Length: 400
Image (cartoon, rainbow, N blue to C red; front, side, top):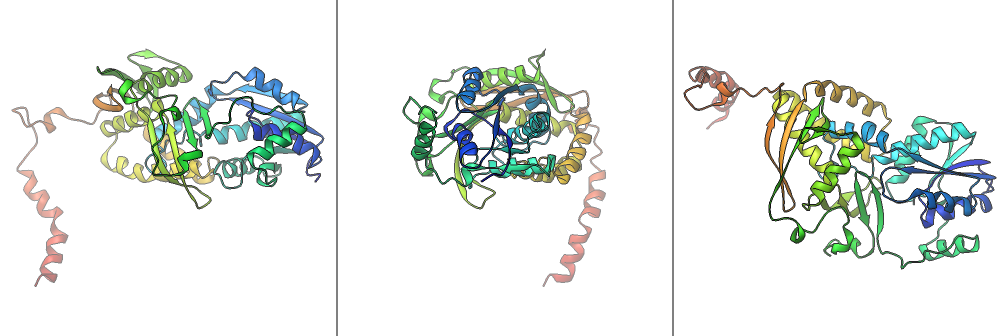
């Protein structure tokens, strides 16, 4: 099946993407496979992964550190949007896909490839995110997805790889399917497919079990500029360092676990376990800071925008015209979202206990019930009369 001569393959070092290399060459007639491994903070040593691709038959094995770009250009805009898919999932895995797609398209242009490829299966969300993002960035390039067509189960894929010089995994195969980056981990498959069964503690890595967390709380102050987190306890951090530091701090208090049934784009429900300690905490803090710096109508209107934004990201439409338009609205709202949020971390909970901003719309002398109260209470009667006018007219016409 000669679909392309030179292909850039998104490469993780796992069984599926490793098998893609000989499969593309032997079954589909690809002459040259270039692999691209993106370092998004997954914590793996990428040197051995780079060599593994070469050993599997790749002509070139690229490894690129994209952590700074990932946090600055993908995570931070999602935080500004308070993006939570189905009001729970902070898109830690979904946010990585448009960046990897961009890296694939750029590598294909640099190396003169006529196609890109990935190892996604035919019923997941990632295939959509890759294919749609790639098409948005270069609608003319071919996208190959061997795992959608080869029909291998895991043992068969391992056997195919062994036949072509790819060693089988030496350790016992985990029952889980895991994706990890600096923003979090997603875990599925195995016994987790039964939504009634509680996850074992072995599922989690970034968050500590509640019973093992400190009894005493820890307080952290997160500083924002234009809706972007920039400081922890008054100290400035780079984007990568800030996320790393906050992951360790909040995860150590058992914060950031999600167990949910989510609606996949392809129409099925999937039970997913997520860990995203820093990302969830930052969205919570950012949303609270907006409550003191944005007017009521902007805040309320933005909530609907946020839901649409999260759905677009989840559904692989990062580079869509609607997402671009929403970005413009969100960025305009963020110019006043400056200040500090104080959070109490204890036993799995991140509780906001304070917030302050030079752009605060909170007025002490209007909110107080003390002697300093400057609110004109007598004005309330006229306001209520006008506000309730339509209700009174309706009631007078329809009451029995």
